[in-house]
Length: 385
Length: 158
Image (cartoon, rainbow over the protein chains, first blue to last red):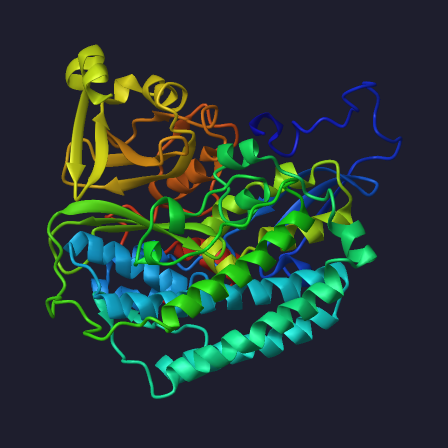
């Protein structure tokens, strides 16, 4: 990996014959930052030989807002809404990770009722994130219909969020210590309706894609990465699982009461774009399973733990991570005993996963770069923070 | 495990725990050998994160933190070391390839140099940027006015 940093070290020679790949000159082109298939403001410098990719370099930071610096100048409570703006398609997961981290620092735990509602909303958010991924990824590859279908069904999730906390994307749904809002009247009915609605819709997406010859041609053996490389590169989430490593933080180090629920960790074998698609489809079904168990068993009781009005954790530092839709999302927080965090470090899954792009597209065609960027499932708000 | 290494390294190593999370304070001179040992002997095969914390009042101003995870043991540990301003630290890219971008971010935000890094340059901020924003003496309202003026053609927005 490391010895072929751009731009000089990439060999233009065929490793077997020691001759240039083609007689044409190498071409360096910019993809992005304004490009519909880069899912935001990602700029990829491609070193090409004809259509073949010899190497890539990602240029990121266009969306950098200095979230970690802002955190040092806000109180713990004030910083909470900011985390929603990182991975803005999975804001609830971001909020959950942050709240759990501060709760850990305060050494309090959210009450069971809050945990159940948190799990329902977080899993709904995972489905929403995967639906958005599926629609845009399929669109990148040339299938337009799934986009309309997934956005139609994602809307149902966003409606539940809006009814619960008033916002659709940057939800700020959780508070340190639990929840601010009780569920609204009809929450459980809405969630159950959604549980009945989605499975046939997933079948519908699969009917469009899973056996589709064009889809298979474009995704099978594209962007292959082995489980070993995933671990070495710190790649987590569906990418790691599609490469055959059965690892999910919800099982490995359960948080927020996930150990109460029965679910499987879907894995793939080949670590290609197709397997990652299959893994995410199965994950949505597993999320539905978790939601079903949670919504049928929401305990009665308080939704807020006993947390002081002014949050002043004792001096110390902790790391807390969760399984966000895109991989391991971690918060490393250092407290100096004041009302403001001394240092907040966010370990963003998209940022680390994006690093694998170079390995995954090497030797592939330009069109595959689009497929691989889609399959990594990045959100630039989180990459750049 | 800790006992074994304590005997080997003596006072260069200190094992601590806070709220059930273990971390090791390691002397700068033991790096990068200690990190390599953690991966090869102790199976910490996944480097979750590398980051730093700035304490301007201390003599050794920076804490460097490696957050490690072991798949075989399902265990997390943090390795910490302290360095002075201007002191460099060995790169871990040859141990965990994921360290590449993580170290670049620490360099970008704190100005800490990782020796032996293959491509150490700014990652989130533009190349010509002055200053290191996550240092405590870099005020939140401060920015590289010159860069903004030259590249964006506007007066500072702050």
